[in-house]
Image 1: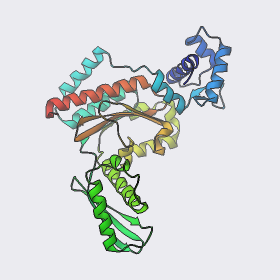
Image 2: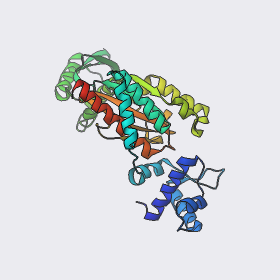
Image 3: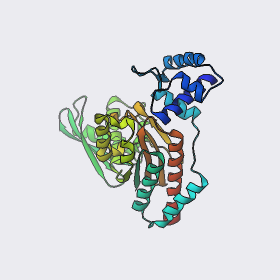
Image 4: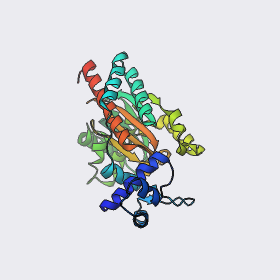
Length: 338
């Protein structure tokens, strides 16, 4: 926990850096934010913040920039969420009521609205059935130390993968193991299944970890991007001048990995999730932040997300994502029930 003064300095550095995209010097903090504190005192406190990992100093500058840890502290303790104004809210609602009652049109408009108001890449997926749940599994012996794992989902889909075995097993043993695990874990999704791995034998754990991975892959495959907007606006920002980073992000957004935008488990409806920089398991997103929420009905969930540099207007991003997800919830409930 930071002292009140250090927290105020960190907030000043984050908000100034978000505005200017330039490293923040102590004199700027004193001049624009904390006039009652001397620049020398601010410098000393900035040294402490740097030692604790909340800010860093680019080697070419005398100023400081926030680290992922600094942004995380800001989001959780210092950020002021910016809900849309009443006028903006009414305008956006009017726009939605002007389009046809189709999920694709709503998703496209939602992405346009988000990208325009936050200057980040907006990704909106249409609702799809999830999470994938286990119906039953089978193990088929292929070689002495190799089996085929077959997973049947409650959605009547089938997933399979090769499973190396730690020891030779006969088909009867594999079938008995599969029946036992099916009876114990049927009906569970990947997240709940992973919570119940404690106490399993090494072989049982090996099988069920593979099952969980297949369920997660099935969940990710359900994400079809209904709309991606804001690439042009995002590419104009300083962070997008490094070619390799941009290509990595574009490859992620346009490829089959889009379903991994939200790590599992995804946030429940009504909550906004903020993933900052290297917190994300996908290396292509380590220089970016994701602000996301889900919407829809209990058995059909879509995603509203913003992807931008870690130097993001978090308060505005969280407020807009929450507003748009809530509005899509209202529209779906009014049109389709729920």
